[in-house]
Image (cartoon, rainbow over the protein chains, first blue to last red):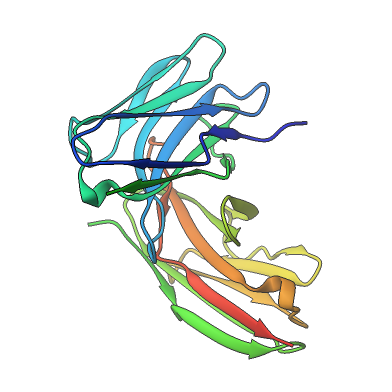
Length: 114
Length: 112
């Protein structure tokens, strides 16, 4: 079975631009969470979507937004990019966002801001 | 403020050594603690611990949770070069079960 897939793998943008990152969860998983991981740090929670509704938001500015589609795939959008947005963006899925169960991660999108 | 603290931050050992990685936490309404291994990209799930004192094992890896003292350890015996990775500790708290709170990780390097 396919794991969590993310696209693109790498992305280079300049300050002020906008970016869209995509995530397909494991088949049957209905919850998707997004994390930002900067070098040398653990992942920081950005959003959770479950059954197409936002269920949680981390301490990130309004430039960050996301949505989940009827097939449970998800997009993360970041507007007005800043140098500090350079990071590995990870998507994780689980069957239910309301049970204590492991999240399974994709390989991430490496975003570099010039 | 919720905290997940891992120690040491980095560790260098030789093949065959046994290592112990530590994770302490201070979070309100603790639900569960998870360990992940991150080599280059995706963190891969190792263990989830919810009950105190029950050891979980998978091959050369084992982990245990102490809910009274608020910590967990991850043991790796007979280390191999393929064990080189960042080991991440994360916790679930309260009803926010889509959100994991991560520590900074322990960078383990195993030399041949």
